Length: 471
Ligand SMILES: *Cc1c(COP(=O)(O)O)cnc(C)c1O
Image (cartoon, rainbow, N blue to C red; front, side, top):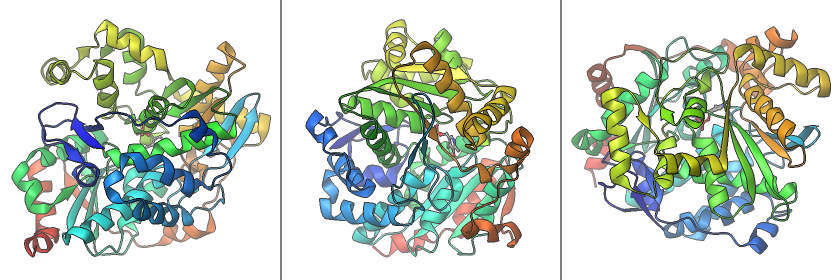
């Protein structure tokens, strides 16, 4: 499988290069040249398979250069540390309403499902090539923790994570700052997640810097993460009767990586009815689907900080398809975003997006009320991100009660104890294996929102310049 950039001006790459690249050199995102299709019989045959075996089967066509043995070993290892034998258990909380628990990994958020695998695959490629890499990531909370856990202690990799100071939860921050390995650097940026992402994009666009440091991206723009996330759409749909029955998904959305994976699963042949994008007050996607205008506004802090994002990077991949893969039209749209703060999605493209997607913005009050309602009706405790998805799922079931809706549970409620306590007066404890972070010493650097400063900070500390120079 080969990969092309959405902006049409970067070289075509194979999977192992895309794995390391993150953002394409032209500022675009890599997408596969075509979507591999999974036959109905092969979807049906996933029933009853262990999660890691299903993952290897589904990811293989995207990663053909890697060798099936490497991928199989990586999936086995990546999911062995999850706290449930099903890896992503499915729980029913209402009529045709299911919660898919994606938070059973080491950092209690769905990011672990992709990041644990990405860490192993990246390490394999670096070892094979005898080089090192510098991972620079921006996080609204959970990506950073997941990346740090996946890469800590790896000798070939230094990790620099930028998070918006004061805008992540106490548990999220401590997961990043209490790791002792000296290849890990947590940076508290004096700015928003969008500021962090802008700095990151700019570093990746500087070819010389990127080359010198062996910059590698692990944000949700990394295609390997999207692919890893398609797996649970398949396995949960199959558990509910796919391919013989359609299923809808409600997805708490920020950077659009998770729900994009659902779209890719559908393009691969999974019979998905609706993909329901749930946002919080940061509702650019809900507005874009309703009006056709893609226009970021300021970021509003909410109780679901991992969704406090205005510029949803992965939306570019969907838009690319919706525009008939015309990179020129896509470039013009993003030029409009830079120059005039927004663009209008062409009517045909908007219509094609609406064929697959619904979107709903869920306010703070509604989120708390949903946590309370679900707890009252089923005894199940939702985290605030998941609550936006469950709220949107219920809205869908009111229109179409006969198609099952799977609401993706993206974080464990113990990551956001204040929001839970406010909604239902219950104190949720961290699982024992994580409790120690609450009184461990924190290590981080607070840096201004200044690209030059951050660029120098990373260059001073990255070891990849030396590792790479040896080759
Ligand atoms: C990252 C994250 C999201 C948003 O996922 P995207 O792929 O960025 O849309 C939602 N909920 C939680 C808990 C997250 O960590």
